[in-house]
Structure formats: structure tokens, C-alpha cells
Image (cartoon, rainbow, N blue to C red; front, side, top):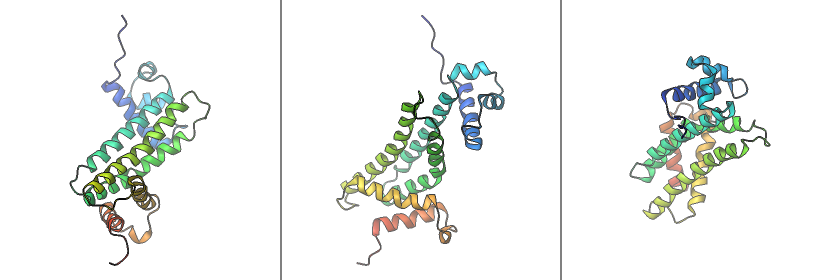
Length: 198
């Protein structure tokens, strides 16, 4: 009986951390396995013991980023009231906007005929459905508690996401003086209350 490779060790964690830093700094194309091994101080066989190749390492880094992002979204929804949940979610979306864009930018460079394409598609789908799914769940709960009108939760989730993403992608100069919490609070107030009087 052959022993399984230990997949969750300190060395593996160090390799993932180094690879994430390098992919973020240099991009996928300009990061090599040698860069990762030199940063961690291990020999090449050690990297290949844990990861089949550079693409496998990259995919594991993307999954790790997604896990962190979704944990932050889950944490944000622990607030008791819808207003507070949405403020916390908006802050997470602001702060993680760069990571989500970098994940999408990097995976778009892969060849569609690549053997990893299904795995990469899965990472992108997980990102998109995870964000929408979390927001839909929050909207559904808000409807159930009587905090929101009885509208389609998917519509509410997308509306909120597009409102927040618009500011996350390209902040308007008059709001640059606001920190993420202040801007998130203003956007949530607008989302929940609308602009009309009475």
C-alpha cells in the first residue's frame, strides 16, 4: 500500500504564499517555478512534490484566494440587520475588488484548448456564483424578515452588486475622501432607501 503525499504541510503553505505574492507582483507569465522555490528556499523537486506544474500551482493559489474571499463574505453576513450586513459586504467587495479582477485577468490568458481549461472555468464560475449566491441569500433573508420589498432576490443581489462594483472599479473623485466604510454606508442607504422623497 503506497502512502499518500501529505498535501497540507507548512512547506506547501509557504510555496502557496510565495507563489501568490509573485503572481500578484509579476503576473502568471513572468513568474517561474524557480522564482517560487528561491523565495521559499527549497529545491525544485520539493515544488513538484506538491504541485504537478506551474498551472496547478497557479490554480491552487486562485482557489486559496477565493476561499479567503468567501470566508470574508461569510463573516460579513453575521451582522444582525440587513443594513449592517450590506455595509460589511460592500466593504469586502471594495477591498477584494483588485483580487477578483486579477484572478479574472490571469485566467483569461490561458489557452482555451489547455488541459486545465475546465478547472479554470470552475474557478471563474465559483467566483461569480459565490458572490451572487451570497448576496442572493442575504436578500432572501431580508425579504423574509420584512426588511426588503418582495422582489426577485437575484435581481436585488445583482442591483446591489452593480452599484458597489461601479464604485469599486472606478471611484468618483468626489468620493475619494471617503473611506470604504463611509462610501459603503452611503451606497447601502441609497440602495435601501432609494432617491425619491416620500
